Image 1 (cartoon, protein in one colour):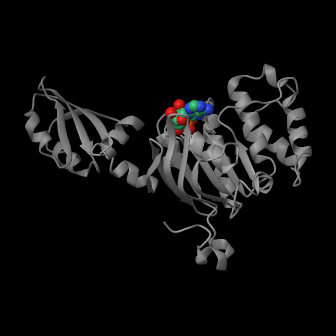
Image 2 (tube, rainbow, N blue to C red; image 1 turned 60 degrees about the vertical axis):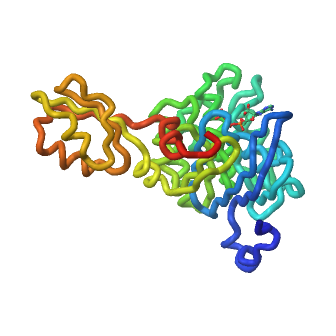
Image 3 (tube, helix red, strand yellow; image 1 turned 90 degrees about the horizontal axis):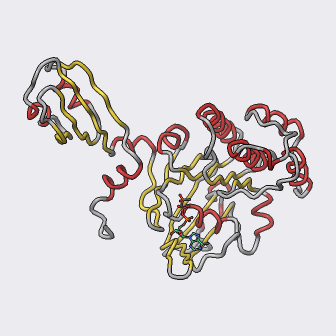
Length: 315
Ligand code: ATP
């Protein structure tokens, strides 16, 4: 394994240093192996989505990046630094939204942000705090204990974003937010990238990752199994398609389209199909048939994992 220390390319040119570089990271909690050799490289000034099912190891990897827990083995660099030896500096230059927020319940959001801001070397501009609060529709004068779950999440996001750090590490940033707010948060992340920030965020939500991420890392059972651009996730994934016809057709005609598997064609006037990859082949076949209606369903994350990794030896 190539060691991070020995990476000559990164030593010569600071812009080439990955924002996050992880090699062979392992971590167990007793008998549970949460990370089983994670390898990952996040480039500077990209939005990187970290996607994986429950219990895959996302939060554990993130906590290692900030030295909130210590890995058992492997190598880790954040902004070129070792989080174990330079944890204060790593946290100073990073904005972090934890998965489980523990805020100061008796303070108002404004009081909490002031307190956290006073602890930082690089202070946030009060105007930035006000403008972010306005965009997120967060009332800064409500005591945190009286905020709804979604509004607590916004307060957590604000403390991560307010000092405009060079790296954002966000554990499920849109969790508990309504769809409009989710969009606003994704827009804020895009603007952060435009201003030169690297964004690393974990998610279960394949649509939001597709919408905002430049690259996606898929973690499964404590290993990063793939890093890819979001479009290719859809290209290779499954869609479930239901087609209704004006009159009965032979379901086999539809099943012959490329990438199509017939799931149900028993009632003659409708079929349920599974389509792998692009839809063009199916659409060409359907154009010759009396189609009344067509519905497609995006697969769940679990279905995509199953489709992509069905042949994994672990399964
Ligand atoms: P989720 O999407 O559900 O938040 P995740 O991908 O963030 O999951 P982790 O929270 O990193 O996953 O958990 C990875 C594994 O480690 C899981 O099996 C989990 O039960 C276990 N685990 C996490 N934290 C602890 C802990 N403090 N003690 C024991 N086991 C833990």
